[in-house]
Image (cartoon, rainbow, N blue to C red; front, top):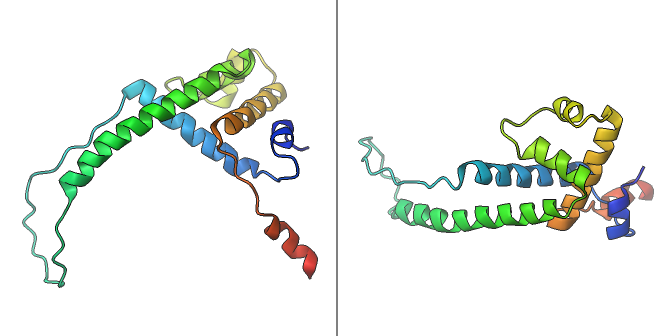
Length: 159
């Protein structure tokens, strides 16, 4: 059975649901981590390491402090924007979809699917159908769809 959300949003295209749902889950986990802990800043390790290193001819300068500063500034902004995008997308879901996503992915500790469907008083089949619909809508709202390459699907027909 084809996914209705993807059929309507992308007529004639084939969406890789597994890869798409993995991307959505990763985005949800990033948002949940930011919501729970904020942004974890990196710090420079200023302790020198006294190890013998052979001369490899490379005389490049380590940019550890520069890379850490860039991560702390850009990483925090990126995490905040990710959280805001995810929160906005979740707020636009239907009530049951929103409840499934927030209970499953944004609560701590992250419960198992069986705990969520029992808590929400849903059957297993209904829960997975609604979760699939919610993930599809989030993928579309967050623009995280993975489109299958049509050349790969046609490769077997030319032989």
